[in-house]
Image 1 (cartoon, one colour):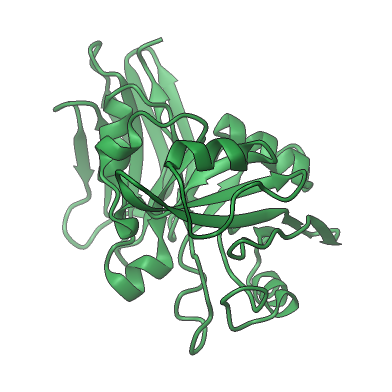
Image 2 (cartoon, helix red, strand yellow):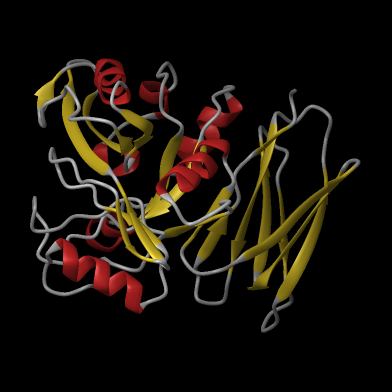
Length: 282
């Protein structure tokens, strides 16, 4: 599913129905319509497709500057106006009063630094990949922000999104998504899974399994040229396939002083899949 996109309701060039049709034709199961400042309701489109209620709000923090937030699972209209001047934490609190889940959107594109995000509470996830920001402004990847925060003890899931606006076609669509392990195809079940971290983010590859046995973590995935085991400090490792070849599984021995480990798989097209972190300091 896609958790961040825009339609003609705000500043996108396709109608909500056109956006739904585009995703259904390409095998998606759900999307969240997150127009700027205008909430969208959840809908059961068909037995194989649903939409989540959502919104995107943005503002300017007097100290850290521009920020954007995505709210999912709305129970009412959020008490925050778009482009309002207020602290990021105040905006998260106001959005969180009516949204079940709050995500931090494209921190690299927004110019946010890890230190700006460190004290924040109330966000469950960070956009570690934003397709629109990458193809238009070369600032779509925020994995370094993510690792900084994880190493400092923050517990955040990582999502990949499009943030598509459809201007001049669909060049900013179909670039980033999440695979969710949900009990059923309903808004409530998808939000439950997202909240618990039962998903992974991708721009192409698939992660089939992660298994932790003793000190060893094993991943099985679609054909990849490398598998990265990323942890705090210096405790990371890349397992690379020989030139011209691919691998579909890899293992890594964990270190007792690691705070977390996450997995990133890269395929021959330079597309990525990112697991959520496994916390080891519990």
